[in-house]
Image (cartoon, rainbow, N blue to C red; front, side, top):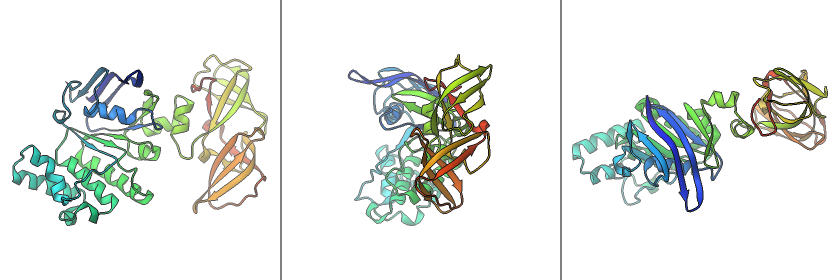
Length: 362
């Protein structure tokens, strides 16, 4: 069942179109993540769902009801912002209960809801503390608790972890995932961090310049990106892209060539040749984790080492082809290379991606 539905939503600020005809739907209980680079419109799209900004065209539906013209407070939505926005003079219990007091919820109901939310978020022992006495992660949990006590139909998270350090972000990702499992409420989450998207989402919505590029599960977007933008955005480190020239097209087999290939050319299978012809420029994509240092494969690249990062359990290699195209590879263990050293990076042809001149996946 469609719980949240956006139908050809447009948002303009003056002459600038920030959201350009976005349509999508989220099922009840689903965790949907909006991702994209800065300025792509993901936070604006969330604000349109919340009712904090007015829709220029199109409609927003929540739980089967058209809420396009409904005030934010009447939409049954709770939003957690990047800024914790806690009242500094109130303790945790007061911060979490303030919204309920404003709508004249009975005191015993307020107490029960705050206590239940505090137990879920492990804030029981912090209820009498003020925000200045809390860590960043604890403050964010209070902000989430303030949203939980309202018992919303829909949770909206607008980059809630971006103010935290790396360790706390990892911990809070797990907490939010567990919270979703426990509450079973539909959640929409905005982030520019594709790692958060991959680990939290049931489905990811990839946005660029106010338009949807692709919607799918994390594995669908990782395995089957529809274009070079999605392919480069999903995955860390990002996918390598190498320019290739088509030397033969045999139905669903395309032979491409580049001077970086040890064999000079490679035959790759495609779902659809997209009308590609001999002599066309295309792009081959290879994920860093699919490149093996010194391996043997029909698809082997000859590159010159620039730098290697030893990360303990893995090493990350930065290199260049003879044409100056940057290539990144990731390998288990610790390795050392000399700057300028020639390296062989091998991959299975089945792990290669091919995109036409416009960046569409073949």
